[in-house]
Length: 316
Image (cartoon, rainbow, N blue to C red; front, side, top):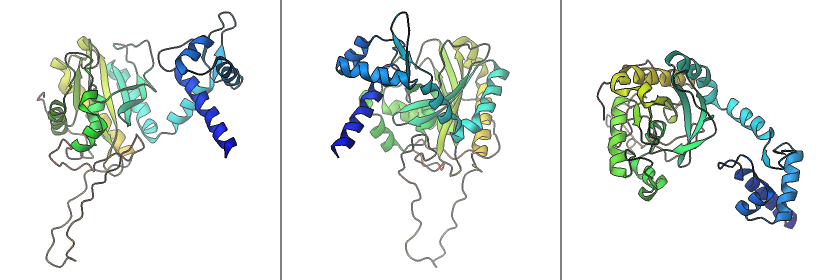
């Protein structure tokens, strides 16, 4: 038992060292890792040497600074390539970015944040960094709003306490009352918009992706600079493209439209009545999100039809 605990502690320490590099620290000295992790110098040096031998980190021969190696890239590539949403959405998102010249992004919910599965940049929306693997807030993004549609209001409040609805700009929604109203509008339209709620000068339009059971399992967005996306002129065009792309991915995942309502009881039932089929499942991007795609008046709109439909023109 003591050996198992020691091995577990070693793994936890190694992961803690690797995690230091994902928080905006591309290259670090041993002393930097010691300071951030709180581990001892000898322990940190030993862990870095082991991780270097396994290609998880590499050390610059001149500066002596450590950075992530190639092994995490290999693991990340294998993980995303085996994700069903990534497989269904990759080529479609790539074509969407090329056709519109804007960014095309696909994300899932992972706990209280969205997680980018993939992104492509169009010629009009270049980026200096890759979004894949990054996490962003749910309440301040179009993708996040779509993912939140899969959760009942009570679940949203438990997942995102109001004190945690951080204001990134003056346009960020920072109360559940405002967020609920926005999600009701998103459910009616079938798509979400975001204009400078996370970062100045950026906007997007997004639509939810549903799995075989009708649950919202992911979302796709079209994004770029404010002047290029130009939602005041292009909202109908871009929202239609996002909804159609989401529909195509949903069909690829096995979604065939909202389930028909059960027939009314005729008095020959067993006295138990209809059971509530809504689960309280808390999926983290694995296709098991809460909600069943049927409107309930709480921001969970009706499941999207199998065939793409034109979005409404109205803005929230």
